[in-house]
Image (cartoon, rainbow, N blue to C red; front, side, top):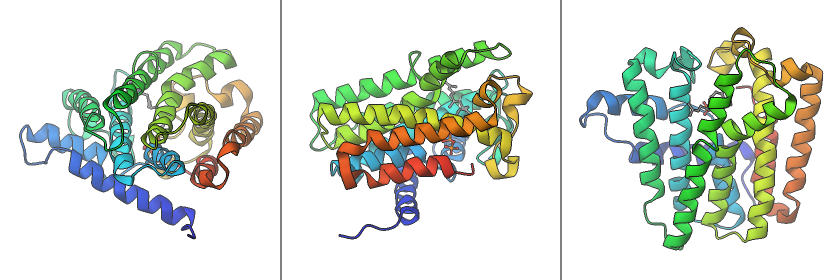
Length: 297
Ligand code: GRG
């Protein structure tokens, strides 16, 4: 059967995710109204949904049911959104614009933004823990552990801690890489592997996809650093030039723009190579790899 082109596939998955998130989020009129309104404000209608797209694309290789992928993608996206809300707080990155809109603590207040993050993280695990047809409870527990590790102190939260400690310090390239693998890469990897597990992928497939996701996690960050320096606030939907303003080590400050572009190209090639055993079944992951490089926000 002919497959639709990438933009149409992307749009169809984004629509599915929007509806799934909408259904999982508490109703805006149910108490506590302000908290629920804020959860919906930050989660719905915005963002590229890269992690859900990766989860779906990986699941597609193993013919995982779309509804299962919607469920797991929603959980990962909720954790991602919580991290953005907390990252924007004055105690962290102190930003006023996210996804083209005022950040949560600006639109609501700081206490609400803290609670939005807390509640989204809990809801993510509630959603991921709902029964999944054709996945055994033992397997689902392993999937929940994978997600918990990716979000925790040995994953995203830990990477954020390293990032905060390193602000204003000079970093070696390996230290920068470690920070990004934790902060950004682990959740990207979890999204990909959860999709594969939903389709009962074999251990060797998981190993290949873990390597693929490690490469695109870093690629995502290198491109993020390039965009922060080269794109406009309007195009990004968040404040541009933030890294330089806050004196952060980035791939651009450590390597220079030209070498950062060369590094991105090398990571892109390695990501494609990591998919070689999947043949045509990995079409969407190949396309997502190129999208991560070509994206404008
Ligand atoms: C607060 C525990 C905690 C962690 C924060 C995600 C994060 C960790 C910080 C965000 C800061 C940042 C610029 C991270 C690097 C790349 C990144 C994750 C960008 C945002 O993700 P996108 O581009 O955003 O997928 P959208 O809005 O499209 O979902």
